[in-house]
Amino acid sequence: MHTPGPWSFKDGFVLAVGPVNDPEGEAVAHIVNHPLEAFDNARLIAAAPVLLEALKVMWATYREDDNEATDQARAALDQAVSFVTEEV
Image (tube, rainbow, N blue to C red):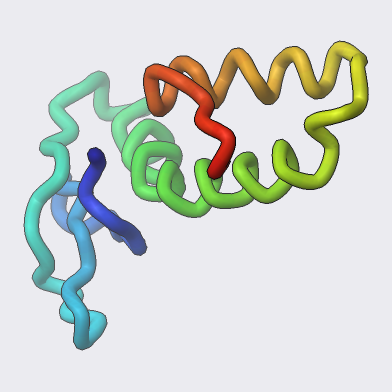
């Protein structure tokens, strides 16, 4: 299980924001990449919980469709959570 979102980015750290929306939340990741890419990487990582939930909703709505989009959604969910259950 991953650290629940929302996540934010501050001073090189991706943070799990606390229950009272504490901007000094628990560190999820420390970004030490190339300076030009670091902020973009951090924003993408910080958006991961929201993206995962959106993908779960999309999958639940369109799972019966057999097309490239649903195939890609299933593959992404498999990668993100190691398997897709009936609850997803």
